[in-house]
Image 1: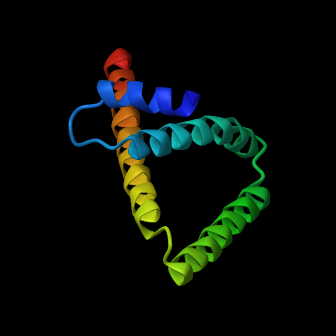
Image 2: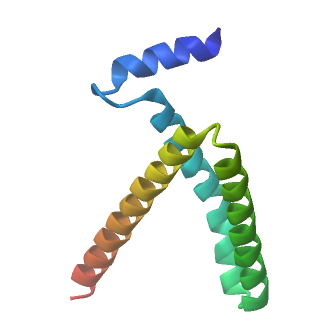
Length: 110
C-alpha cells in the first residue's frame, strides 16, 4: 500500500515519458555508489592494489555470471536494458560532475 502511494506521488512529479522504474533503479545506483565510494577511497589510500584488483575481478565475474543467467532465462530482459541505461546516465552524470569540479579547482588556483 505504501509502495503504491509512493509510486503514485512520483508519477505526478516526473515529466511525461519517464517511467517510475527508471527512477527506482537510478536511486538504487546512487545509494550503492555512496556505499562503495568510501571503501574504494580507503583501499586506494592504503595502496592495496591487490585487494582492489581482487574486488574488481570478483565484481566483473559476478556481473558476467548474472548476465549469463539473465540472457538464458530471457525473463527480465527489459529490466536489464533499463538497468544498463540508468548506469550509462549515472556514469555520464559522474563525468560531468568531476569535469566541473576540475574546472572550478583550476580556476581557483589561477
